[in-house]
Amino acid sequence: MKLHIIAVGKWRECPERALWQEYCKRLSWECSLKEVEVKQTLPADKLKIKEAELLLAAVPQNTAIIALDEHGKELTSPKFAEMIQNFQLNGRDVAFLIGGASGHGEAVLKAAERKLSLGAMTWPHMLVRAMLSEQIYRAHAILAGHPYHRG
Image (cartoon, rainbow, N blue to C red):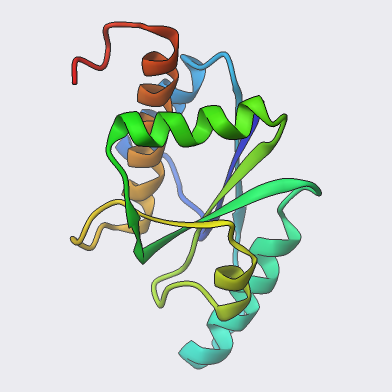
C-alpha cells in the first residue's frame, strides 16, 4: 500500500518536518509527501481553485482521495485504522490532501471519497502533516497489534 500526503505549501527544516520523517520511517507502508504551491498572488476564491488543480494533478491514478477538511468526519484512531485497512484490502492506495490557509477548492471536495477532520480546533498546516503521519503510524500499529496504541 502506498500513502501519499499532498499538501499546499513548502516547509523548511523544522520540528514538524522531523516528526513527519520519524513516523514515516517507522512504517512498512510507503508514505510520500508531495508539496504544491501557487507562486502568484490571487484573491482567496481564485487561489483555492488553483490550489485544487495542483493538488488533484499530484494524485496518482486510481488512488483514493481523502480531503482533510474542517467540516469532515472525525474518526477515532481505531476507526481511522479500519478505514485504511479497508483501502488496503481493496488494493487501493490513498492520497491525503491538505489544503491551503483558505481551505480546499470545490474540485477537491467533489473528488474526495472521504472528508476527514482532525478536530474542531484550527491547526497550522505544517503541523497537520506531522499529526497526520502520527495517526497513520498509529493505524499501522493498531493493525499490527503493536502496543503503541493502548486505546
